[in-house]
Amino acid sequence: RVTVWDAASGERLHELVDPDLPGKGMASGMKAFPTQDRIATFSMGVVVLWDAALGKVLRVLEVQDPVYSCAMSSNGYLLAVCGREEVSVWDLASGSMLQSHRTSSLSRPPNVCPIDIGPA
Image (cartoon, rainbow, N blue to C red; front, side, top):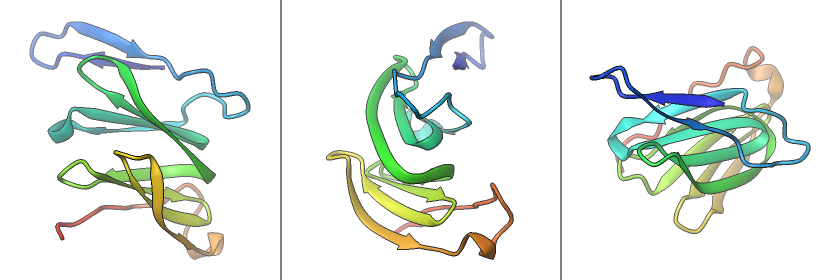
């Protein structure tokens, strides 16, 4: 559960409650993308993309790994997802995975996965 607040007024706007995702558990992390008015919550093998203003689910991405981090392209079209052993890039309009790259889980400390998408 993630609570969204209006930073200027301090007013609580709404709570983002993960949709029923059997076996996926509760959200273990989140990342805000204020320029796109989006929030991503993530957990064991799933990323949920939210409309931050409305508190509505926009897309659910089923991934292979537990998710440690994610990054959105500046135009809001792509989402890079970093898991324990895989980095993947997703098309947010279609919900399809465009690329993936398997990595060694030994190449970084557990739960550490800095990721960003630069301009094309």
